[in-house]
Every structure is written in structure tokens, then in C-alpha cells.
Length: 279
Image (cartoon, rainbow, N blue to C red; front, side, top):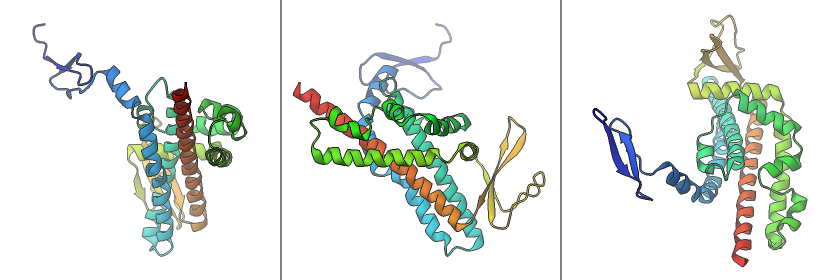
């Protein structure tokens, strides 16, 4: 076609031609092969992520909490905000992981998880689901059994593995209930903080110059512009050590849920593979 600047490459997996334009990044694979590439690595991704990525939020938050004890007043405020950021990230990781696991079979887990963005709607929906959905339905949606169903679902699972899986899932259900009991108000605050962390919030020592909304001496705030409402969002965080300990505790619960969730999924996958190998 005259004036058409499109170029042609080939998919490195299937060899089919790929069209792209000169100003675009040259694709390595066609869309179908890329989905297959990701799906083939989903289990390894979950296993690797469980070893370090899941716990990273808790490790950073706990390190900040320990440093808070000896920090100067300005440093304490920075550390408090850092703890809140890890809380937002831990929640985003958990909600994104649950979303990705529910999409498996329709979308690669890796794509659904890495592409997930926590926002107001997803934060509120998550907390409402935890508060209102029976745990049996919640577990079924994730492809996991209730702890008491493990012997019937996986009769060939070694007793030690079955015991470990039951312990992990029981703990996960308790942590899910604890997280859900935090309420919708926490969900809205979390959603606002998540939006600001994505958009680029600025930390401020005082905010009285913003519509006369002042901060207490023991508070620090992140401010961000809300273009839709044409106002400024202010997320104030207390530097109170006990309150921050509670936040770190919730971060720990969320990371424990993610760890147990991945452990359960990996165990179910391994048992399914053993069952298929015997056929």
C-alpha cells in the first residue's frame, strides 16, 4: 500500500509473520504464542514470587517500624509514610493475586497479576467480598478446598503434606476474616492512598494552607491532586508507634494470606499432576 510504513517480522515461536510500524517496538512473539509463553511459566512464577516477593512488603515495614524507635521527628514521619506505602502495596499484591488466580484458564496468571492496579472500586469490592461471601464460596472461587475437605479431595496426598496444607488454609481463612473485619472505611482510605501512590503524591509536614485542613504535630500527610473532583486529597498518617504496629500487623496478615494462597495453589497443582501421571 503506498505510503504504508509497516514492517514485517516473524514470531520467534511459531514463525508466523508479525506486522508492526517503524515507530513501534519490534514484537518478539504473536499474541497467541505470548499467552502460551506466559502460561507455561505461571507455576514457576508463583513459586519464585512466594519465596521473596510476597514477604518483601512485611520485611520493609518491620524494618521501618524498628527504625522508628530511635528516629528523629522528621525521620519518624518519613518512616510512618513508608509503612503506609507498604500497606498499600501489600493490599494491592493480595487483591491482584486473588484476581489473577480467578482468571487462570482465561488469562495467564503472570499477566493478570502484574497488570493489576488497585483502585477505589477494586478495594471496596475486595473488603465487601471478604465481609459478605461465605468462606466456602470464596475458597471455591480460588480453586481451593476448605481445610476439612482435603482428605476427600486429595486422598493420595501424603499425610504430612495434607496436615501442612490444612494448617496453611486454616490460618489463611482466619487472616481473611481479620482483614475483612477492617470495614469499608479502611477500604476507601486504602483506595485513596493507592491512587495517590500511583499518581505521585508529595509528602508534606503541614497542610493548613490547603483549605485550612491542618495536621496534628504527630501526623504527616501525602497530598495529591484529584483531577476529576478538582480538589486535593490529603492522606494523613499518625506517627503513633502503637497504631503503626497495628498497620504492620495487618501487612503481616495480608502477606500470610498471599503465602498460604500460593502454597495451596501449588499443592493442588502438584497433586493434579501426580493424578494425571497415574492415568
